[in-house]
Image (cartoon, rainbow, N blue to C red):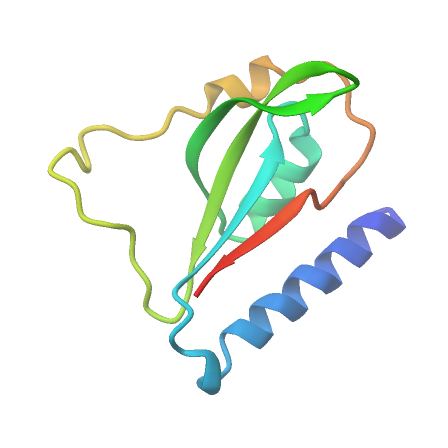
Length: 116
């Protein structure tokens, strides 16, 4: 396990602990964006119970080139996904995560967006 993995774990665990405290009970979800080719980060988030929410085509611009991303969500404090007539018949397909992986430079926390 590398140092960046340890730091990322510490930061994310601290954030989740902070948001699940009794005085933050109104916070129902944590959202984050991740580069689709960053399989290390995707596995990291999935081990921490984050679920793929949506695919973000051309979300990032890296060195002038468009790159795809994913939006992940972790429901906390009794939060639930919005109800849909299509659920559970239509689900998000994660096969693209493994098909877009070309190279991995390491674990990076790209962006945390907290929905409270």
